[in-house]
Length: 115
Length: 111
Image (cartoon, rainbow over all chains, first blue to last red; front, side, top):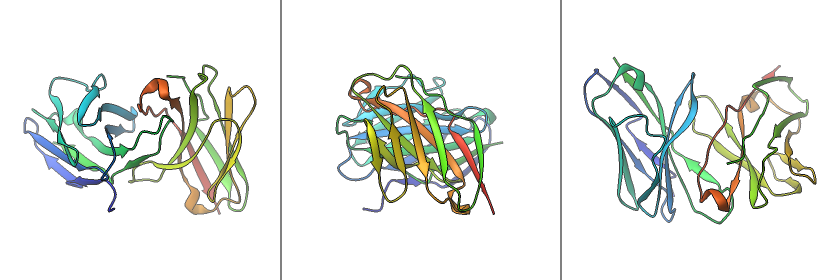
């Protein structure tokens, strides 16, 4: 497997524009996580899915953020409208639940810059 | 979720053994202890996981005392390439797969 694949790797957009980040999890994994990382706030869990169903979106900062997982092999994180404070690295991760604090595999991240 | 506390930063020199301790006083009976490593510009990577006593793999060792209120990640003979942020996570069945990262420990290895 190629691992978790995120696209794009880098995104520069203007304030007010819509941004869509994409993630392809590892085949067979039933959990998918979206994280945001900044120097100030560290690695924050935004939302996670189990079997394509959102389980906990309490980390989503505002209504401007939304995430979907239409099938087991694809997820999107959308920001509309984007703001400069959304600039961060966004990571997607997937895992296969075994009843333990499991091993998650992370993608390379999308570096988002909102100007 | 059990709260974890680890040093913000540590310095070491090449060839030394590095021990990073994580406190998790409120760990639950079903919780496991997991450590991740993150290099700059990369996502975190799983290193090691344990429940009690000692676990060793090709990368590190994890020491967990009997009361499980802390754990120590041991990196033998570190090199410059071990410079990274190391995260301690505690959780398991009760968290239903949820993974929460704390502030981590920034390890700097010097020549």
